Image (tube, rainbow, N blue to C red; front, side, top):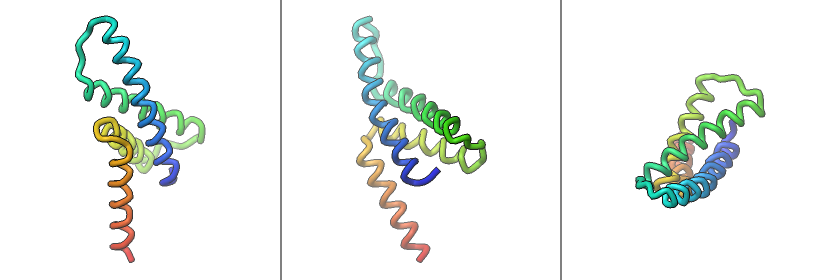
Length: 106
């Protein structure tokens, strides 16, 4: 999985997390149930990132390797962070880490 595909998946999960979380919150409010918004958003992000990972692997016939598993876990963790902090902040942090790693290897 390339860096751009990874970020595209992260953006898709981040966008869908907001939409799905709001839909669930509306349903829970109508039922009169209490919930923790951050916990709900985190769980939705984890489920959606797992679904995107499985969907990507099926569509591209990707074999499950250690490399792909690490990417899948990274997508889940970063999706959870996006749900808590926002997509822009997470992408900014990834870009800073990437630029620091590339500058150290030169």
